[in-house]
Amino acid sequence: MFYTSIFLNFLVSLLLIKYQWKLNKGVIYLFIILITVNIRQITLLLLNQTSHTQELAFLFLHVDPFVCLLGPAVIYYFFSLTKGKIELDFKIFLFCIPALLTFINLLPYFGTPFTQKLIFIGQVQSTQNVDYIPFPYLFLDLSLQRTCIAIYNLLCQLYIVYCLITMIRAKGISPAFGALMKNLLLILSISIFSFAFLIFHYRFKLDIFPNASNGIFEAKDFYYLFTLVLPVSFFVVPTWLYGLDSPSFVKSNMTNQNKYLNNKDQLINAKKSFNKSDDLDRIIDYIKSEKPFLNFDFSIHDISGALKLPQIRVSNSFNNHLKIPFPAYRNMCRVEYFLNLYESNTFPNYSIEGLARESGFQTKSSFYAAFKSVHNMTPMQYISKKELQKV
Image 1: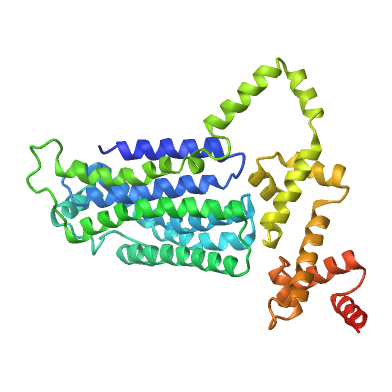
Image 2 (image 1 turned 180 degrees about the horizontal axis):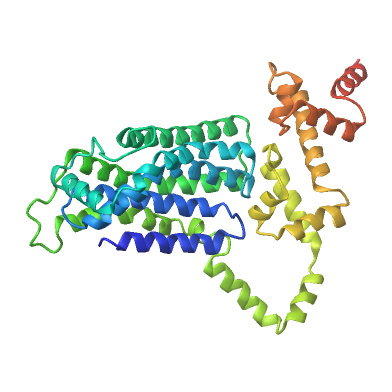
């Protein structure tokens, strides 16, 4: 039972990387999250036992301090979902500063002989008290460091909640991203109970089956089942686990290809003869019905993911068939939406800039530039002209 959850988490992580890597390389952050949470779960269980002393010494004293990477990994994965790619902005690296300080603080500690650490872990397992960790550090007590790490990870999660609320208010959540968030909330709702139980088990020394040692399973084995909930929950949402390239989807397409295409040359010719107007119709219908351009970061990647079309085909639909670049078409949609909001008086208390933000423009300058490129005049000039025409 000790290694089962580790194996299952690695299996789920490999499946996620295999099926989602091409769509979003930020899935590597999800791998870090799964493994880090699993390490923390197993550590909490071993602290309440008298076995696996060496494994606990390694996990608790060498690996568990780096749970400080959990907070940044959650933020990076969230940004990768919103951007559709790994974000390398300099500001992003600021979230790693606490993890770097943790590593620097532990430098003297890592030089401590492992035998001393085994003695300490043996005492912890017998007393189940880790309020004080008697090892050298650089500038912050190791017990206090563990508390700071927990607070920092909580702040990172609250920051994600803040970002989500901001996006919802700005109507900046695309349908594809909204579906991902629903799947994530489902997984969290399934797994949060198990993690909460393990924390209570560690803090309050829960003992549900005190006399179960001669039963079908021992009590300690029962507690390990809770470490399996998180990886198993991913199988409840197969679209998250397998992404757009699920085994059934691939099999269906391969069957059709094998039926009509016998070699590589035929496949290339079939792609050339594909009716591109079908792509363009689907793209236009999607943009008009779902209005993804209200998202500040709306890009070709969002269309590709939502419609399961290669990005090159989406780009060709705009450039070669619609005869207008994607950014220009996106601006036209946003300007049209802005004018509809203004004329319908949907937000009577909003300024022009406020209506522009509701229409998907992130800055005032981008709005004015886009409006002028579409109507060859500023918004105020356009509005004044319309008012004069009414008179």
